[in-house]
Length: 138
Image 1 (cartoon, rainbow, N blue to C red):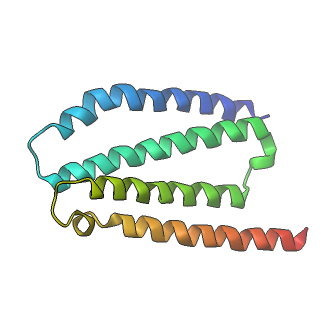
Image 2: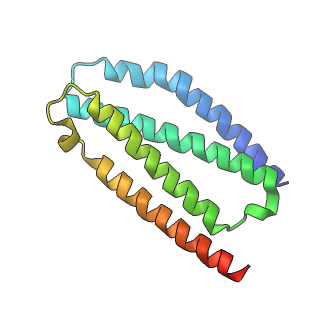
Image 3: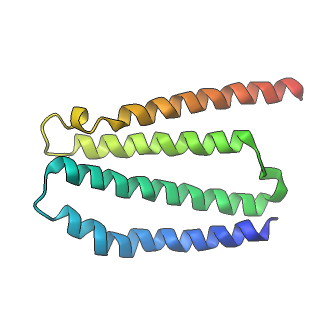
Protein backbone atom coordinates (compact mmCIF):
# COMPACT_ATOMS: atom_id res chain seq x y z
CA UNK A 1 0.00 0.00 0.00
CA UNK A 2 1.21 3.49 -0.87
CA UNK A 3 -0.39 5.74 1.74
CA UNK A 4 0.72 8.97 0.06
CA UNK A 5 -0.93 8.02 -3.23
CA UNK A 6 -4.08 6.92 -1.40
CA UNK A 7 -4.27 10.25 0.44
CA UNK A 8 -3.70 12.10 -2.85
CA UNK A 9 -6.48 9.99 -4.42
CA UNK A 10 -8.92 10.81 -1.64
CA UNK A 11 -8.14 14.53 -1.95
CA UNK A 12 -8.49 14.23 -5.74
CA UNK A 13 -11.92 12.61 -5.32
CA UNK A 14 -13.00 15.53 -3.12
CA UNK A 15 -11.68 18.03 -5.71
CA UNK A 16 -13.51 16.15 -8.46
CA UNK A 17 -16.77 16.26 -6.51
CA UNK A 18 -16.23 20.02 -6.07
CA UNK A 19 -15.67 20.35 -9.80
CA UNK A 20 -18.96 18.58 -10.57
CA UNK A 21 -20.99 20.52 -8.00
CA UNK A 22 -19.57 23.98 -7.28
CA UNK A 23 -17.72 24.29 -10.59
CA UNK A 24 -20.76 23.33 -12.60
CA UNK A 25 -23.03 25.69 -10.68
CA UNK A 26 -20.74 28.74 -10.50
CA UNK A 27 -18.91 28.56 -13.82
CA UNK A 28 -20.24 26.02 -16.29
CA UNK A 29 -23.99 26.70 -16.21
CA UNK A 30 -23.74 30.53 -16.22
CA UNK A 31 -21.36 30.45 -19.19
CA UNK A 32 -23.48 28.01 -21.16
CA UNK A 33 -26.55 30.22 -20.60
CA UNK A 34 -24.91 33.35 -22.09
CA UNK A 35 -25.59 34.70 -25.56
CA UNK A 36 -22.38 33.70 -27.26
CA UNK A 37 -21.28 31.99 -30.45
CA UNK A 38 -22.26 28.30 -30.47
CA UNK A 39 -18.77 27.12 -31.36
CA UNK A 40 -17.26 29.02 -28.43
CA UNK A 41 -19.88 27.62 -26.06
CA UNK A 42 -19.39 24.11 -27.46
CA UNK A 43 -15.63 24.38 -27.04
CA UNK A 44 -16.03 25.55 -23.43
CA UNK A 45 -18.45 22.70 -22.80
CA UNK A 46 -15.90 20.22 -24.13
CA UNK A 47 -13.11 21.73 -22.04
CA UNK A 48 -15.18 21.48 -18.87
CA UNK A 49 -15.92 17.84 -19.59
CA UNK A 50 -12.30 17.07 -20.58
CA UNK A 51 -11.27 18.30 -17.15
CA UNK A 52 -14.06 16.17 -15.66
CA UNK A 53 -12.79 13.06 -17.42
CA UNK A 54 -9.18 13.74 -16.48
CA UNK A 55 -9.97 14.45 -12.82
CA UNK A 56 -12.14 11.34 -12.50
CA UNK A 57 -9.59 9.01 -14.11
CA UNK A 58 -6.69 10.59 -12.21
CA UNK A 59 -8.51 10.12 -8.91
CA UNK A 60 -9.16 6.48 -9.76
CA UNK A 61 -5.52 5.91 -10.74
CA UNK A 62 -4.20 7.53 -7.56
CA UNK A 63 -6.46 5.40 -5.36
CA UNK A 64 -5.57 2.25 -7.32
CA UNK A 65 -1.84 2.96 -7.02
CA UNK A 66 -2.37 3.74 -3.34
CA UNK A 67 -4.01 0.36 -2.78
CA UNK A 68 -1.64 -1.66 -4.99
CA UNK A 69 1.46 0.09 -3.73
CA UNK A 70 4.81 -0.37 -5.41
CA UNK A 71 3.35 -2.83 -7.93
CA UNK A 72 2.17 0.17 -9.97
CA UNK A 73 5.25 2.37 -10.02
CA UNK A 74 6.56 3.09 -13.51
CA UNK A 75 4.25 0.51 -15.05
CA UNK A 76 4.12 1.42 -18.75
CA UNK A 77 1.02 -0.68 -19.39
CA UNK A 78 -0.91 1.15 -16.69
CA UNK A 79 0.23 4.55 -17.92
CA UNK A 80 -0.55 3.73 -21.56
CA UNK A 81 -4.00 2.49 -20.59
CA UNK A 82 -4.66 5.63 -18.58
CA UNK A 83 -3.59 7.95 -21.39
CA UNK A 84 -5.47 5.98 -24.05
CA UNK A 85 -8.64 5.88 -22.01
CA UNK A 86 -8.42 9.62 -21.29
CA UNK A 87 -8.20 10.50 -24.97
CA UNK A 88 -10.92 8.00 -25.88
CA UNK A 89 -13.29 9.65 -23.39
CA UNK A 90 -12.25 13.10 -24.63
CA UNK A 91 -13.35 11.95 -28.11
CA UNK A 92 -16.68 10.68 -26.77
CA UNK A 93 -17.30 13.97 -24.93
CA UNK A 94 -16.41 15.98 -28.03
CA UNK A 95 -18.74 13.92 -30.23
CA UNK A 96 -21.66 14.13 -27.80
CA UNK A 97 -21.28 17.91 -27.48
CA UNK A 98 -20.75 18.34 -31.22
CA UNK A 99 -23.65 16.15 -32.30
CA UNK A 100 -26.03 17.81 -29.84
CA UNK A 101 -24.92 21.34 -30.81
CA UNK A 102 -27.32 23.60 -32.73
CA UNK A 103 -24.36 24.87 -34.78
CA UNK A 104 -24.61 23.82 -38.42
CA UNK A 105 -21.71 21.62 -39.44
CA UNK A 106 -20.58 21.31 -35.82
CA UNK A 107 -18.65 18.04 -36.35
CA UNK A 108 -16.42 19.88 -38.83
CA UNK A 109 -16.15 23.12 -36.85
CA UNK A 110 -15.37 21.29 -33.59
CA UNK A 111 -13.24 18.60 -35.20
CA UNK A 112 -10.85 17.81 -32.33
CA UNK A 113 -12.64 14.50 -31.73
CA UNK A 114 -10.76 13.12 -34.74
CA UNK A 115 -7.41 13.77 -33.05
CA UNK A 116 -8.59 12.40 -29.69
CA UNK A 117 -9.67 9.12 -31.29
CA UNK A 118 -6.45 8.85 -33.31
CA UNK A 119 -4.31 9.47 -30.21
CA UNK A 120 -6.39 6.92 -28.30
CA UNK A 121 -6.16 4.30 -31.05
CA UNK A 122 -2.38 4.60 -31.38
CA UNK A 123 -1.96 4.58 -27.61
CA UNK A 124 -4.01 1.39 -27.33
CA UNK A 125 -1.92 -0.12 -30.13
CA UNK A 126 1.19 0.83 -28.16
CA UNK A 127 -0.38 -0.81 -25.12
CA UNK A 128 -1.03 -3.96 -27.10
CA UNK A 129 2.52 -3.95 -28.41
CA UNK A 130 3.95 -3.40 -24.92
CA UNK A 131 1.71 -6.14 -23.53
CA UNK A 132 3.01 -8.60 -26.15
CA UNK A 133 6.58 -7.59 -25.29
CA UNK A 134 6.00 -8.10 -21.56
CA UNK A 135 4.42 -11.52 -22.14
CA UNK A 136 7.33 -12.51 -24.38
CA UNK A 137 9.68 -12.16 -21.41
CA UNK A 138 7.43 -13.99 -18.94
